[in-house]
Image (cartoon, rainbow, N blue to C red; front, side, top):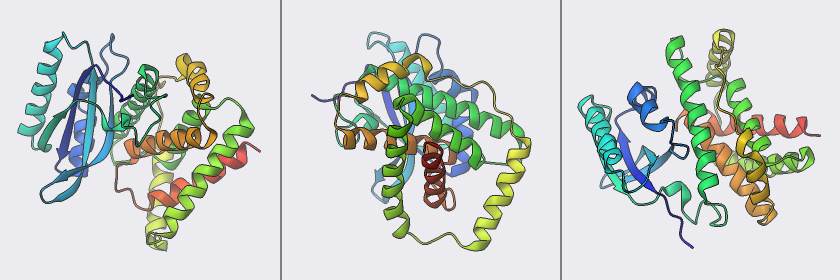
Length: 270
């Protein structure tokens, strides 16, 4: 059965990574995705196809009853303002979020509950990115924060520590193959990343983040109803998408750093 989504979904092509950061930390974006009655709105990063090729973009899904046409108007106004500010260059409305497509998530899991999990991940990412913006001098969260976010995802979906460790190892194995196919980060680049992380960690204080606790029991129950490999892939993809929300699509040495995080977390489950 094909996934459905009640609300407005738009793809937006941003002009630069700085524009992406500005867009995600603007009050209008936070307000759009954080309405009190709205528990299933989220954003994801994805490549958008254009006549000139594929470019980085955002998918923004705002949940609302179809009868509330005013919300669609709010989304259109948000896009016009972003376009006028030079943050985005093109937009396209779609019926269903790509993140819910059958190729990316089991249709037995592409439910309202999964959308709630995506919304929580998005709220956590927006909170972290806003702290980064306010801190000044940094554009991405330190590795320690991203590691905590991956751990939070795996804990939300998998209660058993041994099973969590197995899933993390499976995720790491997949990343090992990816890392082998890309150019390794050079020593100077790695030095710069480590230095920036030390600086950011020293001044970085997170607010209280929205918790997965309210839905974690149901997430785990749904995950137990699908094949182990399929479930591990689903959690790995969810965690990886959260990393991209935080670091953006062009963080230097991202895959290698994520692999190191996965290995550390797997060892912590032994």
